[in-house]
Length: 501
Ligand code: NAD
Image (cartoon, rainbow, N blue to C red):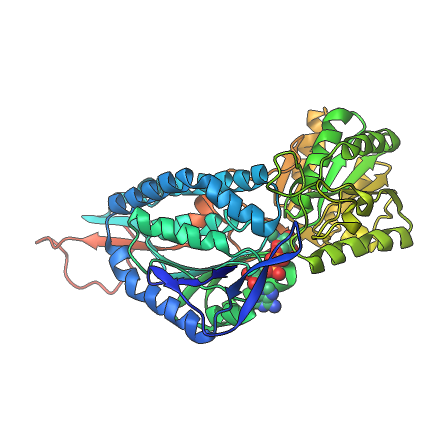
């Protein structure tokens, strides 16, 4: 049985009592326990980070980037081990888990360039013998609170840039798949990061609330569901912290009649069922513009029938189980709801065969196969609500305008995609759609590390998206220095407002 601890001051640190179960989603069995931090344990992690911060902040950019490069090499060397940990606790298939590790590593690679990213501006002679320059400085101790669905990648959206910029970072991972955090912590130590600069507190709301309350935590990055994102944003900012809180999603793919329907069907199935739909950038609604609906649904259904569902460590599996039994039950409840709301259940994932088992409904573990609901009524709960599982809804629309209105009328604005061969229509869509990340013939338009990731509306609370230059800005504060070296001709007292002449 695993016993997953905190990581404080450069070493594993046991908990003071409360724990939560970790499951193997493929069998439903308990594989270990994770400690749930008390407020005092959070305080210990923040104290260790506060103690480590001044020396780390003052270490040279060259030294910090060298630690980043070593961390990058170690993470690469341990990528399969990390992917295996993710897969066995989350349930996603190994290749998908490896993909998440590699996408996270791209942010580490971006952060290796911190000497360049922190370059300021310099203006010589803004006034007579006066120079001005801008610098960016770290904030101090910053915290990251992350969801279950990317236990390696989402923390890597945050801590590489925070640490490279000179902050100390405390991570509160999801309690459902916490082990990846400890391997990453051990690799930071091996890379030469001073103890305390990276800490991990395992836990639940108790740990989150203490991080939001702690006066020494200067900024909080959060990724998770919308209600908790809103709470974290409101609570953290009310306490004077800088907060970026990314929430849930309901991503629509708008398919225009001129699109290549084989490309669309491949994309919809990949983006709908990869990672069992437990991705914030998953496509969960296909808006099929008349008259292509029937043809497109046929192509989607034939591809879904060919998918192989099974345990994440089976190389033949393309889709694994869901993360917990409770989550699987919630997702499955939308199948009956959809039918009750008037949709047609064209593929029922409860009957999907599972490798090494029988059907999804009858195999031990948290199984639900890929599910397709057609003719989902626009505005129904199945259409509007985040399901976060392998359920793809097809909504029939009569025009581009009707499709756009449905996207823009939704609560969320995380990702979206348009499929068309008409460049003008695509260009109009990118301009008119109220969503933060847009794909044109690309179903999961996750920005690269050197751009910033984030949605609009209920998908993000705060002003700053994660990673890229916005990430650098989030973890630093700007300062402008105006300097004048004494000169015999300084001019004496002048009570007028300096004008730069
Ligand atoms: P969640 O909101 O339940 O949990 C996220 C984090 O908040 C976890 O660390 C958890 O321990 C903590 N938490 C949970 N309930 C809390 C509470 N009441 N008070 C304080 N803290 C609490 O989310 P999840 O189920 O782990 O992850 C899935 C959700 O995350 C989905 O809604 C998905 O769309 C979203 N997500 C969004 C993005 C994005 O970039 N926008 C990326 C990944 C996941």
